[in-house]
Length: 346
Ligand code: MRU
Image 1 (cartoon, rainbow, N blue to C red):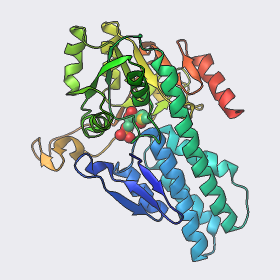
Image 2 (image 1 turned 30 degrees about the vertical axis):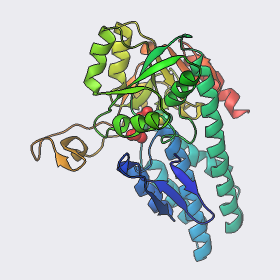
Image 3 (image 1 turned 90 degrees about the horizontal axis):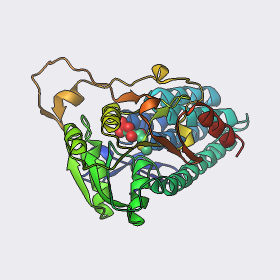
Image 4 (image 1 turned 135 degrees about the horizontal axis):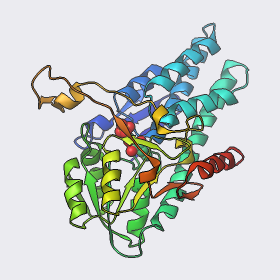
């Protein structure tokens, strides 16, 4: 299932808020449509919002070029700023927009439109290939026997544009006979695990069992989890990793129970400007996401709420980071810098 379908004059976005009940795409014609889709999580997942953001910039360039208004470049830059700030934690979004702007050379509007479309298509293909490489590398870390792996949030095709990051490893591991079963954390508050990951695994007929987030500890204590695989929204240079809220708790549990804890992320998720997790901005979302489940109140009206969408797992709790340029083991610092360097020159 593709999160985005791209046409010559618009982009169709799969409305992930409606999954698994309904599979519906809606049309985006301008950057503002994409900003709204990213803000409301119609499209979500670090790599997917980077790609969506870049297509949003292309759509805006198309619109401005056709409208023939003055100040084409200035208006495009305003749209770029709106896109790059809409979700602050996943670095892929600002990275994709900044990289595209840095590669744009001044020229006629039509040329800018074509160039942005090319860059968005290229990024999409690059991310797909990165997923495939991570899946191969990560599957080798699973013992060559039937593993029971636990995952959090959704890191599959819906969050990327290929087989996925952590879910890509799980898919490949299953294909190779190394994964017997997947424990799927429901992932409160927005239920990306139960709505999206469970749905993807069922479609692939990979044996999976849904649990509420609070059940992971007991299962680990009973020896029913062999490894944990999660994705990432931003990785600092020291290896500290921001991912969906609840990931840090799983990492603490995994260390206590001596279970390997793996982060799977493309090099585009490593932030070369951030030394440690302390500097990663954490998105705080609306209180009603916690007070309500799909519009139904589950708490007294007006109840005070804290709703950080992500938390940071310190590098010391991570067994390895699986990137498209190789698997890195602690200490991460030098190796992550080296991967970024290699990626820049590729
Ligand atoms: O708020 P979301 O649904 O965008 O959060 C997604 C995650 O936290 C994923 O684990 C992360 O983006 C890695 S996806 C390949």
